[in-house]
Image (cartoon, rainbow, N blue to C red):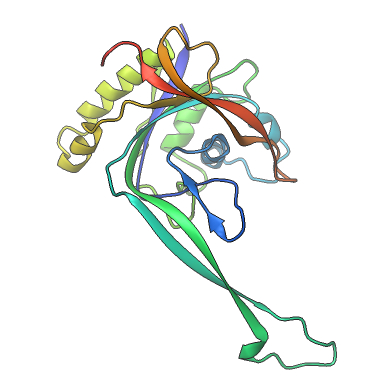
Length: 240
């Protein structure tokens, strides 16, 4: 049987950055592979300059299911000031010597996620170790940006079975977990029938509706280098 680690993510604001072009930083509806790997690495206490992080990033399949309500998209801006180049003889910088750049950020509000992690051969950390790290993370965890802290415990659990069965189990498990929370219960009861995964050979369990390339597989953390990987989107073949 295949072993999976399942956990939930919920926060007031989430921002899963897409490749930035100009002054606009868009957000995808689901976390990128690099974002989830960074999230797990932070929980484990792996620093960004740690030599083992590149090996860590080559392992683990990631799947997710977002629960989102209409009207949950937000648009914010940041202002950045930088000095205009002046002659070396000038010692004084006045206010008018600065340029102001406005940059824009996208956020999603009130989105709930169920995440499934699957260990691959040679993975440096077992799912049990990662589960313990999510219960007692070494570094503070946030969802995409430091201004987006978690609003719920991650509540990680281990499940053995196929990926589609792991999602069915997660749905059942977290419905019971939130049965006394009317807000989360309503959110989980919303129409969330799209699933995202990078596991291979899942056509027997999912109806694939889209395959896209996402440039979010980190290969060198020091140089900020990423390569493309295939992300699948689809529906469960059996009803929940």
